[in-house]
Figure 1 (cartoon, rainbow, N blue to C red):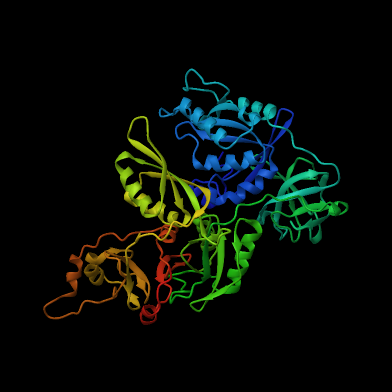
Figure 2 (cartoon, one colour; figure 1 turned 90 degrees about the vertical axis):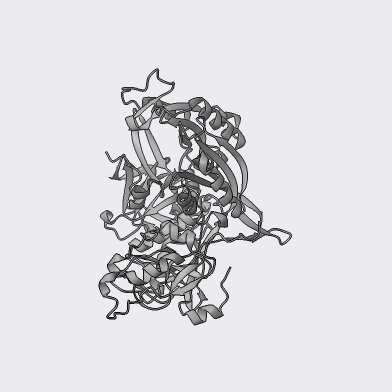
Length: 584
């Protein structure tokens, strides 16, 4: 069995995180148990909010060493708001660094801080070693050679969590997940949700209602599926309380209600209220000189119409993402895409890149709103940062420069690490992860959760230096790059194709400068071409997509293509660029 049975998406496997919610089911004795796996990161909060309507209880999994993290707090907050019954699972109790007593106290304090009811505070605690498939209602005397046993957890689920509440009437179902599966071969999207009343059968006529109660259209259930274990199984009939997938429904999307024709008069099932987006980026087609180049860019989807259709498709399956009408910026038709955080939008960009799109993407910006007195409010994140004790000062200095405020800080038991909690503006979180990873040499763990809106904290100081900008088209040479190394850190190596306005490095000072990285060495009787072999270049700084998103400035763009990701100035022509004041 794959060690990530539920995390089936390629990006989930690569990054080791849950991005998309998934459901499955299993039979335990005479009870059918529906299981829904949700992301923990607050950037994917839309996934959490919409699938919690499908469940009647939760299992909160907490690491025996780390304790409850901001992700735990986020998911638990949403679950308690829906009055769901919790079971706490403390995992990895066999680790030598586990601190069970402290973690259990931290979990109880977390429940109290979130105003859990008396009933919710009477949660059952299950101890687990997930790697070995062992669970227990009490701590074992030894964690060595324990036989796999999941019955204590399953018994707790069956006895403690309530059965689904069933309504009277014919079929009513709320769509919570929308996906596509080429193996079904029906040319339609698959709609997954929980049946609130009645039953569904293949061939039934149904009506699709949007969240406002408007009729989207009448359709027929062509096929009916249910997840059992890791398999999707076709079934003939499903009943109230089941989580099923319908195929062949035209026009349906997430948050829509699917109901029998006689049930239309009851209106739609209320969809969960989502937290508002906190960050936005502008998407446009790639218009650089390398756009459409098969060798250097490799994209096949290059038009504004294809970009628009793809973004609209994203909003149908991910209701936490909003796309606004196009606006002209510097001669380009741009679509503003709003989401929960840079990670969520970064995942969207990466998926589009793998699908063959070539994009120009603006820097992320926080969505500011006004209070009743007309004063600016900005989104604030609660950031928990775990770092080696010797790097704690660097963390403090970096966060203060981004208008962060420390609310708590405490050392680990052995005194080698320190965990600090900050309240940081969302705009200050952009690029923070990459900067701290670089400053701590990779020894840092950062977790964030949305805190709320607070008065605007003012502008930041300089959090980034200037850049080196290619002054002409060509191919970079060792000779030119060797002369530029004292001026800053390079992003490219020799023999790379560059164009005017492309960013090729970071300057040592705060100003931008134009440089010629394609300069060739002049050959004379005194200097031979072979002398270039003596130049020793430092390795260029290699950045992932998330690093680019955190690095780019207001007058710059990220050029995203299937084969390469580059940084460039929004206005490529240096004369026009100098006449235009950079945007803040």
